[in-house]
Image 1 (tube, rainbow, N blue to C red):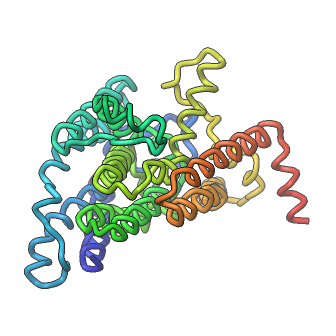
Image 2: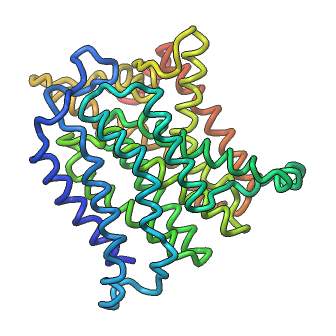
Image 3: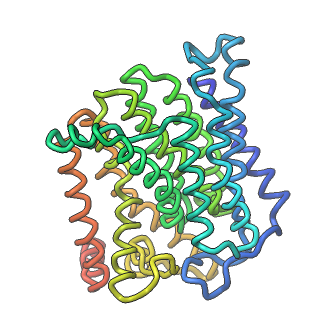
Amino acid sequence: MLSLATLAFLLSLFGTLWVRRLFFRVGHGYASDAPQRFHLGHVPRLGGLGLVLGWAAALAALPALQAARMAGNIDVDSIRLPAWLLMIAPAFLGGVAEDVTQRLPVRRRLLLTASSGVLACWLLGLAVPRLGLPWIDAAWASWPWLGIGLALLAVTGLPHAFNIIDGYNGLAGAVAMVVCLALAHVAMQVGDRELASVAVALAAATAGFLVWNYPRGLIFAGDAGAYLWGIVIAVVGILLVQRHDIVSPWFPVLLLIYPVWETLFSMYRKLARGDSPGMADALHLHQLVYRRIVRSVLHEDEAEGMLQRNNRTTVYLGSFMVLTVVPAVLFWRFSAVLMGFCALFAVSYVLAYVSLVRFKAQRVFRRSRM
């Protein structure tokens, strides 16, 4: 497993650098007044190409690593890499098109991720087999189409959830890497080395990408990178629950509650004021943290000051990973405990958001520095 991770890291590291140099001037950047723009100058948004290179090529090299006795006891055939590549192709290619042109409508991108979800359910037999609620699970098992529908919803929606939090250097990448490592840990606990390999390869490829993305922001993951993270993580999480009855279905939910709740809450507040849920704005939690907590970072160079505030925002939001990943890894078998932590996160998020909107959090942080 260590050899696989090393290979994925190196391929992504040099692949992302190659993509940055080759496609530095390819694609349209955000307009200077775009709500999701928090950097100065032109930065390529094709980091997803380096990510997919590191992840897919490392998994494709598994037979060679095994032949060299460097990969351990992994059933390479059961991974079914061609099925994974075919599954992610519609969403990933659509993400690349959006990263280059900035002209792909939200509905078309949603349709492309839904196509990847349909392929996942067809090629990998994806379905959510239970909800971890005894009084519902009996009826749930009687209608298998419900499990397929929920899996389709998860694979369709999670890529866009990662895209929403992909606003600052290292934020979405750090979340994806930590979540993949948590999934790999539990997969190893239940003896599923094949799913662990898929997750470890993506975590290592993400680490290679982060070398260039954080803290200097030399390249962004873009829609393609966010879609790759969302689809692979969603499928690994569902397959882990589907294959192993001991794993609670609330384990992947708690792992991913930050991007999922950010998406649901954003849809709610946009609908509440009569806006389209697909409309971009600057009122996500990470954007409020940027403008109202880390705005005190000043620098003579405007670009350097913006970069430092950008990076510090990621550090502040790292606390959400502690609030979700640690209990998920500790209690991955216990649905009631995991549900309780999901509720705790939702309440904590809303309180933090309201505090930022009402300018209360700023006073707290100012006192802490006195």
